[in-house]
Amino acid sequence: MLDFDYSFLAEVLVGGLLSGVMYSLVAIGFVLIYKTSGVLNFAQGAMLLFAALTFVSLVERGAPFALALLITFAIMVALGMAIERVVLRPLVNKPPITLFMATLGLSYVIEGAAQLAWGTQVHGLDLGIDDTPFEVAGILISKFDLFAAAVAATMVAFLTAFFRYTRIGLAFRAVADDQFAAFAVGLKLPRIWATVWAAAGAVALVAGLLWGARLGVQFSLSLVVLKALPVLVLGGFDSILGAIVAGLLIGATEKLAEVYIGPFFGGGIESWFAYLVALAFLLVRPAGLFGQKIVERA
Amino acid sequence: MSQGEIQLVVDRLEAVYNHAIVALHGVSLTIRRGEILALLGANGAGKSTTLKSISNLLQAERGQITRGSIHFEGIDVLRTRPSDLVRHGLVQVLEGRHCFRALNVEENLVTGGLGRGSSRVEIVQDLERVYSIFPGLKAKRRETSGLTSGGEQQMTAIGRALMSRPRLLVLDEPSMGLAPLIIRDIFRKLKSLNESEGLSILLAEQNSTVALQYADRATVLENGVAVLEGAAEVLRNRDDVRAFYLGERTVSDEGSVSADRAVDNPRAFETIA
Image (tube, each protein chain N blue to C red):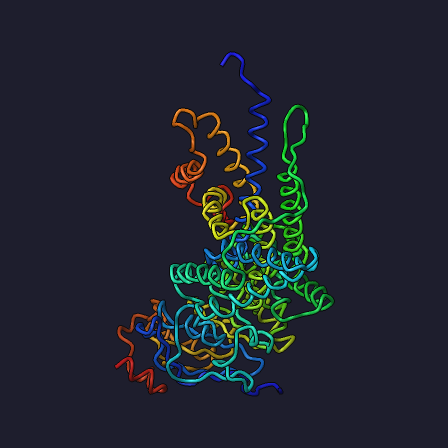
């Protein structure tokens, strides 16, 4: 590698990191619910599709952008709370696999409902951000990716402040730490779960709009959950910070692997390389980078 | 409610885990307002199950009450959510303390206030009160709870329960894993809360020596049944009781305990015979 192109490397790296942010967005929705109720919500992808589809359909029917956003937000919050009330609460204290199966079934119900309500055709989603790349220090950066990163950063800052400085945030952390103790202390777990599901609905909306704008709003949008799984394995299922860092790592690794290792395999490794990384990581550190550190004095 | 009035009644309680494993077959006990009742018994006697039933926490551990009833100040406990029981003044400090390990000491205490639904002002007042009872906690208020000592964690757990302004404090094995001096310190604090504020206390203990020293009365469980009940003072001096039910080798050289020593409690006599 006599004349290695460093600016190309930087460009691939930045592009990878920014696309990783998109994975983090999806993963955060999982983390919120897993942390407080121990449920791996497979329906997060379907919620994301539902949000994007609802928003696009409203806009196509002539609703102004802001109004459509507001209505979709309200619907997603309501959907999240309804899922908690109707599906999860009756299953409290059931084994994790039962809860997982319930969310798996739920994801198909939501997908079906979304298509029943809004049809099956593919929609374009324009958030009004033109995706012309611009140049910083010789590196081309996508404007859209940068916007997505800014949105993700804002959302994480908001969530962090919420958990750190509000009463319900403290209750949330208590439940995440020790559910039985939180129950005994008198915290109202159903109310906390409902809030968390509502928050997950809102996160699904943000992720759905960004992913929808990128891929088009269609059935396969719900499959981005599969992209979040390696991020969760790497970052730990119960850490928001982990979801961010792992999203960035997966994004960057994927792109670098595609560009530098891909040619040896005839290309196309980007779609599965993340799983390979996750698998390798499971063997070394099953709890993930930031997964539940048990804080206890020996 | 005046002093001495009956506050909690547990009546012939039967409980099973997973619909199969019987944990209690008939536990009855009563607590009067302002008294300390010790619930004694060996490992597996049913102390924890009884206490969890009293806070209606059993279903969270896949247990069910199959018969019997529990009433706290006229409230049907088994039909009341744990969060509502806390609001009514019945709070439990769980076995093994169960502090929120990733939260700092003060945050742990505040959750107790949240459980009661206290206002911000009430929480600030109650924090000061808990810190005046356990001054050691104030110095550690910003430390991660999981990194504090066992004694500090027990104080945090008790302080967290006090934040919800209980009228009946239920403690499951508060002495577990703690050094004798710390146990004495904690029990003295509990006793002084009991004397100064009339706080009723129900505590399950394997350490019967300590429990009988501070309790007014005691109920002894064996294999899920309440086998005897009496004034702590009396039980303290009955070596036979401690030898038979609490697994302590305190029987003197007289050999086997004669039946007449147990005869003043027919149920105890039956079990021994």
